[in-house]
Image (cartoon, rainbow, N blue to C red; front, side, top):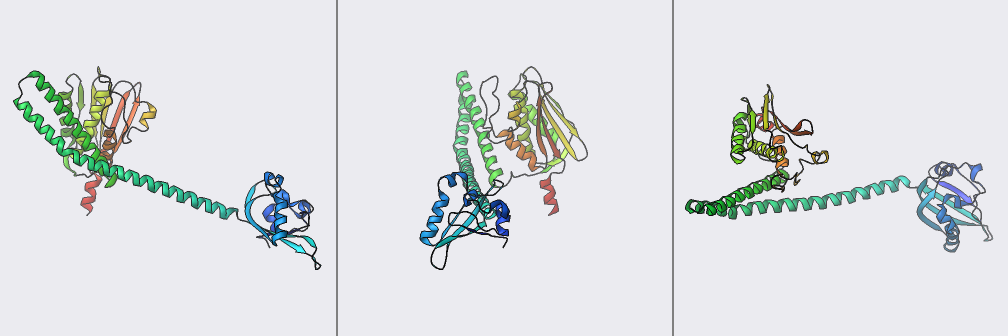
Length: 364
């Protein structure tokens, strides 16, 4: 029998016989093991603790001993084994030895451990997923419920501004409306995050549009918001099938970041290159490079970036770049960053001129 180690011990526990299964499982040849005490098959700490003697005592007192435990092969490796020891008696009832049967269950134990580990991993993943889904649904509800009171605040501030004449009051109202606008953008980012996570992606409404018009609108807005900053667009006509509102989100985020974190004495440049199938847009700023460790997580949600050098505060929720990447990805494109000391920082948007979203609609 090759699958079981079957051998006989003398009354003191020394090996008397040896079969082929024992040689295969334990690694000893018959002339190497016969005459040695069976404690050589046990981990040293168990043998020193008297485990072997106790097993023989139990076998005698109860008629049989059985357990599963660790055993040691000739090469020192351990195996998980099922062991049975049965006392052998002469016809007149004298103990003449013990029959010992060992089965190697190492592969079965390993498979069970793998199954337990997988089950634990699945349980952890399920719990984590449940928490994430709760958080994202909570954010979605929160975002929707904040919209109505915020709209009332903005409307009220607008009415007050029409009636106010005091310069100080006008400045206070303008700050109120600026804060309201900033909070509105945060809410939209929260809702975009939940849409991308829960709905499997952001909704897109692609239609023929000229990218030059999109970039021009954002540049005009940024120049009005930051009149002291120089913005240099180089944008030829580039017509493609895109969601204009979504791409405005992308370039507003990228150009705004370039203004906030770039060298204020150097211009922010936007360069557009067009070929038959794709359009590539580079938003470049000079200044300190983005640290490498931050570049690796730059597009993760809720990643707060470097501080605004003028306000000493981080701005936003850390969702802008994540949402921008999701928007570009939904168009079948890519958003990447390159930032080195000598060359400054470049955010590159690559867009197919026929977005995959519209291509799927055409196929239907």
